[in-house]
Image (tube, rainbow, N blue to C red):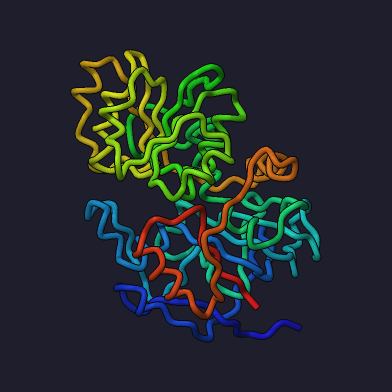
Length: 339
């Protein structure tokens, strides 16, 4: 019989990494349509530190209302220990992975930094058999983001970022520039573009060149020594995994009719210039999808997509992982392990 409490990392206030508390928390209650998972590993993503900081980077009207205490985390890999009566696709003992309740759980309702988590059946997929829980936990949000931006949106939800639906563009035979290519989304974007037959230009700091060459990069630009927008021309698509106001600088790298997809589009101020140059700007909000994770498991199991891990920390030391985030220059993903 399961205990009524578990260990989790929770917030009682907004702030820096020091506000993360490893403490006792109530066990999740299993609801209709859900599975209960014993978490083995947790992937760390930008929304984790955005929530910890109080979503200061969002406009006030977009900032979700948070009721403390809250548990961070969306990406988990673990083992099913219980299923609701109406769940048919999963059984006790299944190894699974998921991105949990995103974006609906942006106020802390995802609850991944914990020993156990309840997850809607529709958001769960069987874990790729060829990788361990640490690598599986590093996948969901980052690879789903790259997939939904570049390959298949996979849903018909209204786009909160723009009036029109985001539509990926054909990649075969095209030249794709990936900015922030060594990061969580970036290193997956490089691999998906190569899988689809594109020529890839990767922008990152020099220490990441060897890795990005291994992942299939055709041309590498070290932004610490070369300004990419002054060096690269006639690109078909830019995937800017850094995003923000600086995305505008990549307009000059694109050919007329090209596209710029900023993963973080807030602050982009180049719409008029893009229209003048005949360039499409488009973004979307990544959403949980067990169906897409099941499809992506095949790419991971066949080795067509590789997961890169920067650092691993115990769940109790989540604050150290967030301190690592603050230092920047992350190669791949950070992961928490749960004993």
